[in-house]
Length: 112
Picture (cartoon, rainbow, N blue to C red):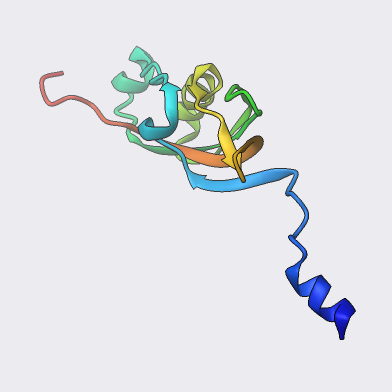
């Protein structure tokens, strides 16, 4: 019984990476916006691109991969995500690697 009680009180092990879900401006130190290429604009390419990112303990993006959205816009979104930086994510007050996603919206302006 004492072992069961001790196990119940024991903290779970620290995760290697923290899943944080959607990441946006509030967490960003520098959120780089993608370059909407003239070619994509001429092709009337619009849409939302979701980029999964991994951030190290210092807040630097170490990987970025577009997981959905128009193929023609994915490279621009990935490149912007890779150049962004974030406040360190914390687990019990200590910086930790984190995994989440950024959604970029590409829309043509009405005056173009």
